[in-house]
Amino acid sequence: MPDTRRIAWNALTSLVAAVALLGAPAQAPAQEKSAPSQEAVPQKLTIDDMIQPVVRIKVFVDPDARTAQNLGHERQGSGIVIDSNGLVLTIGYLMVEAHAAEIITNDGRAVPANIVGYDHDTGFGLLQAIAPLKVRAMAFGKAADLKVGEAVLASSYGGRDGTVPAYIAARREFAGSWEYLIDGAIFTAPAHSHWSGAALINREGKLVGVGSLIVGDVAGKGSGVAGNMYVPIDLLSPILADLIADGRAGNPPKPWLGLNTEDAHGRLVVSRVTPGSPAEKAGLKRGDVIVSVGGDTPTTLADMYRKIWSRGQAGVEVPIDIERDGGKQHLDIKSMNRLDHLRLKSTL
Image (cartoon, rainbow, N blue to C red; front, side, top):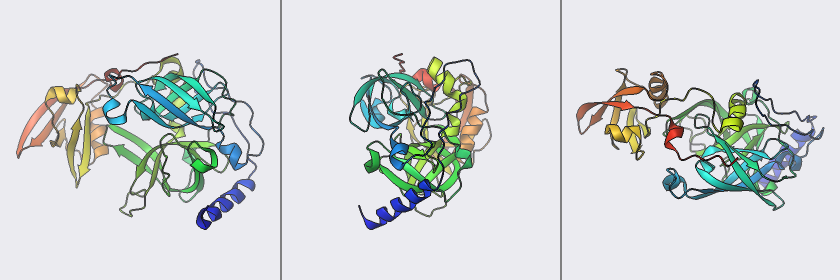
């Protein structure tokens, strides 16, 4: 391994060895539903212990899946074992609309898995191995406790070959073009090349985030430092029991329109309209500029989402003014629940 990587590994190994690493069970939601149970973990963890729960996942998506065009019919990435019964957490776009899946441990064992649940708001997805994985569960840490500059491990499947030292570069909100917004997203550097579903592990060996994206500017200030965005693990506990029991979160569904929007120098430009979506049915087109939502002018992508979601639950009518070909038009878009548009299947 290159000297720079060896130095980074040695520094992080020393940091880990200096801390008494106590495994703790993931905190279950305060609901009377099935929740993960975790076995006791060693009092002290080596780096190899830390990354053992990170597994490879392969999923197979229905031929008529609505996400197949953009995400493919066969997908693979990483997942994290989070309980002693083989429950695996991953990033949802890897498994949404899947009809079958398998989990491959770092020693090469492949185990079929059931599709458990998906949450669009956080981006989390859950699978369940149908046979023992013989892999310990990774305990949950607290993403809220992470500090900028803190050393972490970014681990994808493949053991040490899939694991790199990183640091927390920023904590800030993230607005994705696909009607996605989370507060307190975790940004790390340097970039991990296999980020999808990767585990972000703190120096106590606990899971603090799940890999979602590669980004060109982790600080969000034009520095040009590339890195990754992780979804904070803190967002999982409030919805975990519902995902296990029902396949989806129990929160009131947000209104979904079915458009991708880019913030281009302060202008919110529609870059894609999902076929069959409320936006397409209302006549929205690629290249349209969003001028107002309910008569209020959004200043950012995040602001636009909040204005849409403030109208009410999924199904509410969302009035939007657009600019097209130099003129202005008004559209009333009857929203829907994003999950009702997808062809979801739980195989449990």
